[in-house]
Image (cartoon, rainbow, N blue to C red; front, top):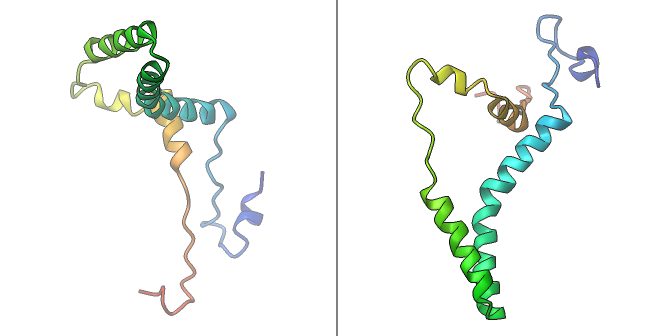
Length: 115
């Protein structure tokens, strides 16, 4: 880790900041969330293609059963006005914020970036 003085050497004492560090567990939580969210439709599609290529009715039936279960499982209720703040404070939400947070530094001495 770097200290604020080494991370931002030209910043004044009131402008020195440290980047938000993400723990290994939060990093893995964010990666697994996207792997499940984006990977499940791909896995189902590949399973259907594999069942057609291999001519396996058992694999096709299993894939269709998983698809039906995922299509009809109950969805969570929409948040009420008192719950909206709570959903933003869950571990997954905070991990995703840390995963996608970045800091943009702009050199204002460049004439193209002054305005």
